Length: 251
Image (cartoon, rainbow, N blue to C red; front, side, top):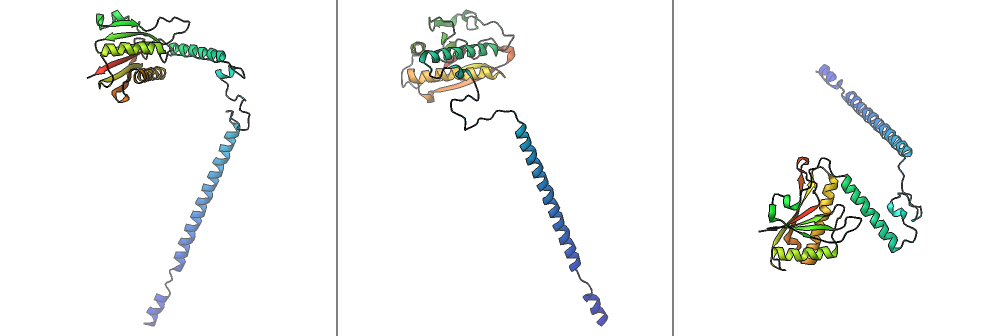
């Protein structure tokens, strides 16, 4: 019996626990050191890249009149007059017109005349404005179909003049026999070249301009107007994409 008691007392497990704990602490310390070195390395690299960057940063301490990013507005004198502003707007219109023509996809089919469309003689065209200038401005004409009114914009024009808007109002009321509170619903659709962001942007601006005029002048509630931009594949382009906004009466 004494020999058995001595063998049980000689079994001591503490050295194994101590070795395991020491190994775990050493591993955690090594992991923390590696992570700290990685963070320090990437911080130094990011600082060096920022110092080598040549992108100009806007200094808040600079004077308000100091030009950091020059543009067309910098061509204005220090105290611009109304005529200076009008000249700047004309130059912007010219650039917008050239940009729209330049961004049109190549290989377009020739633009069809109204009497050459599939609708045939069922389409009637009314001149929108007799104004003629060096720059395209406003709406070219209104085309009438049995349940559709088409507003054809000139290239580079994003809105219509007040006279053209009033003309559209009279044509709209007569064509659709519209009266305020009649509850008629209308859909505004416009085509845009598929994959061409410039065409989609122009289409959105023009359909928004027609929608705003309908609400402001004709009195059509916003809840009665829906709008949609239709993507046209390159094989079906005609050259009138984003230029024609169609107002269709929805039953």
